[in-house]
Length: 431
Image 1: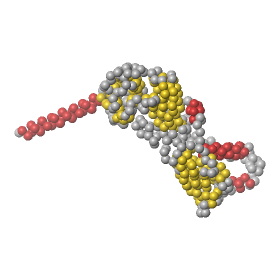
Image 2: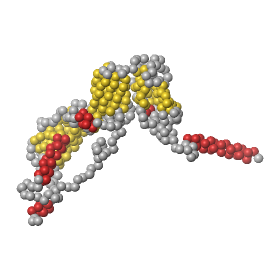
Image 3: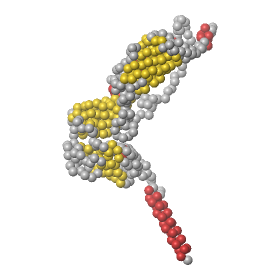
């Protein structure tokens, strides 16, 4: 008779555990019949307070929320990177990793090197969520000191993509006071703009980085730019980010454009100040490697501009109602219907970033520097032969940091396609 008693006891334990689990799960959700909780978590306190001077700080900086937040993936990394939770804060200036820990409704932050005698900037980024996935979208910045006085100077500016000719969204910005090696961090907004307050006057090196791997640092594969500025009370800078590729550029592919033009594409963008001349570009006709005379070399944008001008001139002649012989033409079918193209990013009609961008200012800033290109177009002095193979030899191709490269690429001139004379017959036939 003891066995049924044991069985009954085990069943009671299992039932109790299941009931406890059900009650625990039920406590996370909203009460039945009540309104859903859609409010994001709020920051109710940060220690040390903004503006505080704490000479002997030993413990952690604490961010206190009004409710339990999602743990996500805490971890360490330079400036607070390394995990989803850790990427929600920027503590600077810090050399090395930052420890970010989760304590239900609290997040603690501390540099692994310990607190130094500095003015610290703790930026709490948007992205914290509660257990119901309500997201905190605001940014909060706390400045506190472990000894030095907090400054009152301001550094602002904009991060741009030099090669792509646009703004760099969410760029990592670092202002390093000289002669130090670590600086103050912030993130540019969705308009590429940034603003760092309460700096000490002095000389700074300012970096903007496309932090694609999220490590809060600069790698040789990521586009970045830097400039030096002497900060008095306020200063603004423009940073033109680009890849700092230490590998020399090489011609990658050659493409037939027309009977006297060939396009050469390189492995990376070239320095627009180091233009090509015909002494560094050679075209050879195979199989005998016969040199072909060159007329001119253009960047891709120069060639496109010339092509556009020629096309507009031809269109205006057609619009005038005369052909090359001066005869009147029927222009009712010349103008094609307007093509509705999808709006480009940043163009009218496209989804605009949350931050208002002064597009006129962006265009003005980008116009200060010549535009890099990874393509050139070679114009020959005479037409190429159909169904013939050619080789292009390039010397002294210079990338954006001054590395020079050379190489060969080949291409084949295609067989000419038969000309469609249907429209010609229609024009010459009587109405």
